[in-house]
Amino acid sequence: MAPELITDPTDERVSDFRDLVAGDRPPGVEKGSGPVIVEGVPAVRRLLASPYRVRAVIGVPGRLAELDLPEGVAAYEADKWVLSEVIGFRLTRGVLASADRRPATDVDALLAGPDPAAPRRLAVLEALNDAENLGSIARSAVALGVDGLLLDPRCVDPLYRRAVRVSMGHVLSLPLAVLPDWPGGLGRVHDAGYLTVALTPADDAVDLGDIDPRAHPRTAVLLGAEGPGLTPEAQAAARVRARIPMRAGVDSLGVAAAAAVAFATLR
Image 1 (tube, rainbow, N blue to C red):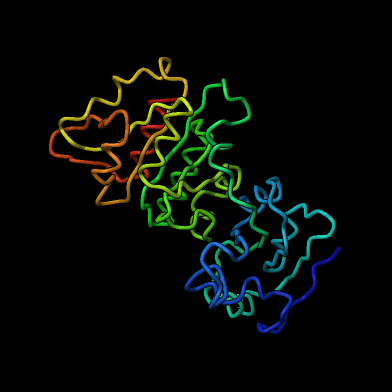
Image 2 (image 1 turned 120 degrees about the vertical axis):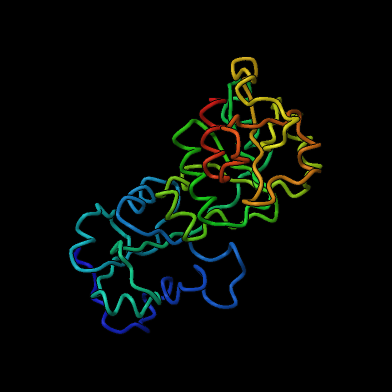
């Protein structure tokens, strides 16, 4: 079916996409409760292949033709000026989709995985408040064999529009859970058989390369926010504190780069 033409930026049919400048939800809607917003053809394709139910898609003329939209998905077309008025900024990727949120994965289900006896890798994030860093970590996680993200309650919404965009939609394929008791809840991770590895640039931490991934089939990498890193409490709760060896004069990597190195090293 041909997409429906939108000429009025206040059209209620595209209310999911209205005023995305400050966030991905209308004013007054609680964080983490609005629709998932996905930008760009590659990311929308991953959304269509994910378990998330697509609500609507809007794009500039010609861009929707690049998507194989299933029957029943509301599709709208608007010129770039109308689309900019709807969303509040100039969209360079030409297409947006909205989808219903899914319930967060149960923590114990995330820890166990499909097979509780199988090897498994998790990323555990503390107070990661930058959506783009979280999106980059999610993209590396999918690429490098990490099976899910476990977040503390202070982390940014992993399904915030910018996180989804930077992840190129890959975050939509990752199980996501929040560990409400932090860092005390890490005991549940240990009980599930994981070696918890806290990344830190501290000189007294072990070399990350000295951890044998074959000896630890279940490993969880702990990562803190850009700048402050992991809190002392989180480091103390982990089984191992590990550092990435670097050239003298460089004290640390950005958290997204450090995550990718750790995922690859412990794969």
